[in-house]
Image 1 (tube, rainbow, N blue to C red):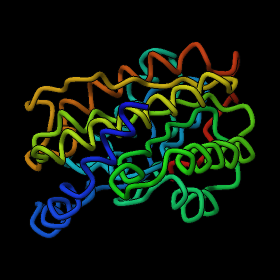
Image 2 (cartoon, helix red, strand yellow; image 1 turned 180 degrees about the horizontal axis):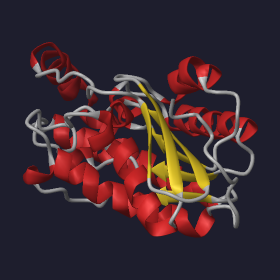
Image 3 (cartoon, helix red, strand yellow; image 1 turned 45 degrees about the vertical axis):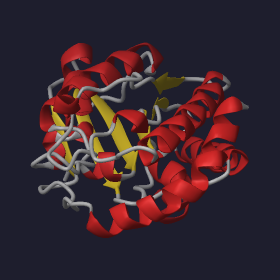
Length: 249
């Protein structure tokens, strides 16, 4: 309750600051390279990464070096499987837009594991907390309908209060809101089977970010990819389908 009150009390101060930041902030493009690939050897495991600019790889040179490729590489090493990965990410999307725009365009076959990254744009658009809960639940339901047996890693809402690009009071207000939204995401994940909430910590050092001060660096993507793979491993189906899937083609 205190976080909600503090956030709305700061709102008259942060709206002009946010509009100015949106106009002047550096805008990095999505990562280059293919949005699908494979790594490792052994029985095939199909991985989907879906969501916002973190999935699009902003801050990394290629998608393979961003979160989708890094999770796939770590999963292949940990599982001894051939991981075929597919990335569906777009900068600026909130949870509702991901469900509306990206989920219907997914390949028809089910995935074994799914990484979901949403939340930052839900916070910065000043979405109400009840709407965030409803939109995130609807997105996870849509992904479950597509891939009922998939293990899901739900990325936590990052601590916006640590983002170098942001300055007080905007940093303070968005940091409070991000903590609330992350707690909601963790609560939703706890009530779903084969779903892990990936906590991102509360205090990220500036060197963890790319040059825009807002997205992870390439090194951070590698570290995070291993963390996500570790959380997914206990949730994966006991057996994987044998043979290549062709999804990486």
